[in-house]
Amino acid sequence: MSQAGTAADIEARNAKETAVAFERAAVRMGGRTIWSDLSLSVARGEFVAILGPNGAGKSTLIKAVLGLLPLADGRASVLGRPPGEANDRIGYLPQRRNFDAGTRIRGVDIVKLGLDGARWGIPIPGLPSRARDAARVAEVIELVDATVYARKPIGELSGGEQQRLLIAQALVRRPELLVLDEPLDSLDLPNQAAVAALVRRICREENVAVLLVAHDINPILSYLDRVVYIAGGTAVEGSPEQVISSETLSRLYGAPIEVLRASDGRLVVVGQPEAPFVHGGRHSHD
Amino acid sequence: MIEAALFQGLSWNPITDLQQLFAFQFMVNALEAGTIVAVMAGVTGWFMVLRKQTFAGHTLSVIAFPGAAAAGLAGLPVALGYFSFCGLGALALAGIAGSRRSLSAESAAIGSLQALALGLGFLFVSLYHGVLNGLDSLLFGTFLGITSRQVGVLLAVAVTAVTLVVVAARPLFFASVDADVARARGVPVALLGFGFLLVLGLSVAATSQITGALLVFALLVTPAATAHQLTSRAVLGIALSVAIALGVTWLGLALAYFSVYPVGFYVTSLSFAVYVGVRVGRFIARRRQDVALAPEPA
Image 1 (cartoon, helix red, strand yellow):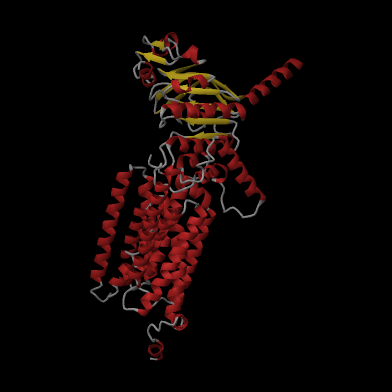
Image 2: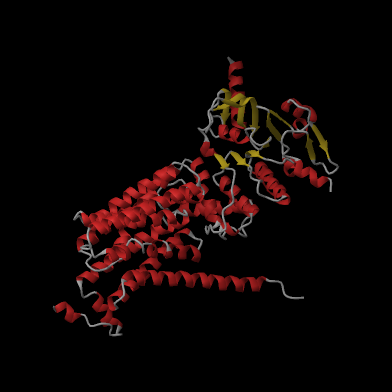
């Protein structure tokens, strides 16, 4: 009996510490299996990147985490609940187009929407909750180093500045899991590294689990705890060194793949059907 | 003919001129209707500009024209024509938007609807055989002959529309600027889009009765666009949009009263002047800022 109690305790603690757990999961859309046999485990305070070629199903995994797509097979839990049931504890940043230059809405208002955007009615002036909300918005904007430009119209800000404010919006409700779909896509290389450093810092300081979909691993490589590489209809999870290796990727793609490490530490993947790492590699040859 | 005696023309004495404006019931009705319409158009217009639905708003205003003409032809109150056609138009637009086609296909579909509406309006007016000499006022507005009953209807519609927008203000704002995130947070984005088009249809129908179907934009777009230029703060922007709409309506009505030119002309010209003034002002302010920020020549 005591054995069972201990096991239950361990399970409960695991549920508390494990933000995302997928076991041999599969997703099918329109009769086609996107991926199967996908296992994944992300703990609180852990920074995990989802990598893979275009069309491999990276965004599909995000949708499965948010419960927007049902699993065809396997098991999944997100923050200790079935996917979709704990979405109010998830900060989600969808794959993003930038705000166009004509959007004359202040960054701080965009961040505030993360807090009260789903509430009906209008805020009553003078209520203590309003001051509390304003303080939280200011705090989270400070956390992403956006205080200087948060009161400017968001359309006039650079891609990196907009991305920081959007991360602040995703963080403002103190989520336990942060899901970022290609947040680095529209940024130049120094900004990609800066935003990745910021995400890592938030991940550690706020003890948030982070799932980040990325196209290019090199700018974020040094900040990651683990990677999930989706390709060939399935996925491999592990440390960047384990996963981004000639052996693992060759097995995943079912074709000979070579991973080279440039002298500056950049990884260059050669021979894959569609090569997302090329652009980091090109720089290392300069 | 006592009323004719009361009309003295512009005396250039602000107090007697103001007294004149309120001396006739038709003018009081016009000012009341104008005020109601301006508040409603200011609020919904701000969201319309934010949501980049100006083209949809324009189409609703064009749809208002055959509505009014059909009502005139059938011997029904013109307001009924405005509201029923704008309501149906909003449903059609929501249907087009809901079919999730590409943006270009959507605007082409809206444009086709617009052409059909204008053609229908012209047909109804022709069928009326010129007895409907109010074609000008249907298209370009009038402030004559607004009854107290009409004012009551406008007030009821405006209170409904503004209340709906206020209750849905934050989710609507969220859905307008950031639909994907709003959807993920459980905001009913599609329902809000549909509801907003209906409210926009109500606003257009109400505004049409003052400015005419073609000049609706003077109150619905221009003040809102000016407010977006002036401030990026949401609540202040809505307040400014309403204030500008009110200002140009009151001044436009007063000018139309004292002159031979129609109210639609004054309201459009005034709001356009405010818009141009603000854009020029912002351009100059920006140039100054750039000069101030530019590094000093070595």
